[in-house]
Length: 233
Image 1 (tube, rainbow, N blue to C red):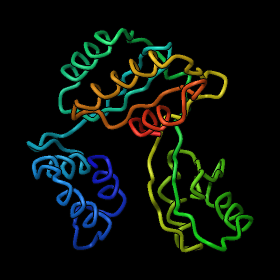
Image 2: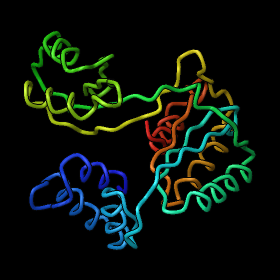
Image 3: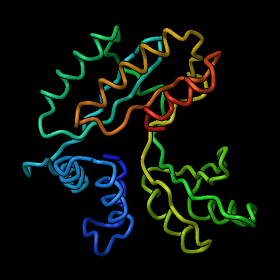
Image 4: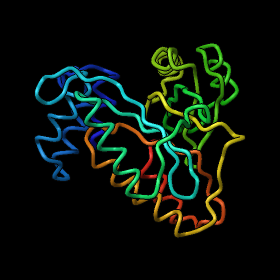
């Protein structure tokens, strides 16, 4: 919910009166009991400042976690030294090691559009490529996913929305694991340890996204889905 508020603020602006999707996200957050202070903090972070008004800086932390899974942790913080120290300690407590892993990932823009009946996928594909898409995919729910260069994320989303009337579900910059680095999870214990680490990392308000180079392996579908719900992609 925190990241959803930030997303819609960044896409369409901070005024709920002119940003119906942000207004809807705020209403939903209130309905499910999301604290007012957390809503305010999310709006502030979406504008690049902390709740106290201090400018935020980007910080990327790389590590190897349980199961030898490479991780990239995207942060926004008003105190890099403090955040780095806090997250390194969390990683260490869970048996991880802070070490360069960014070379195992590619930074890409990703836009997800809601599925629509009767869509001509050939035309959507052509428009997506013309808008700057490097890759086009469809998820299990039929939603269309396009990948772009980071600088073309917003413009590609706007072009496809306008030309095809597609509803944008999400639009962000991600760390996409390179295919030749993917690690398959084969043990439930490794999955649980990894999930526990991610949960503790995400309790830090500086953490905006956690990215992994993990694949399902022999882990059952339910457990794998739970892990995917915790991470940024």
